[in-house]
Image (cartoon, rainbow, N blue to C red):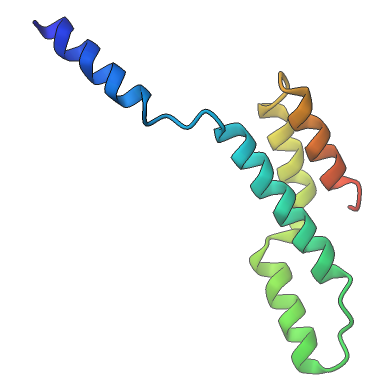
Length: 93
């Protein structure tokens, strides 16, 4: 009886698993890298704009983008398509 309950729970939870978790993490990283590149290229035409740029670069943790990308690559070493996307995102840094 215990095995039947365990088996039913396992089947029910399997439906909750997201098969694209890796792609989601890589997608979030790529989007973050793109935003870092965007904000780094913005023109600080006055003090308020400079503050906005700095705030966004800080919020996006742009100073750690290369390190974070390398760590993500280690966790995706068996997924060449993810490695390619990460490398492409890091090309601007």
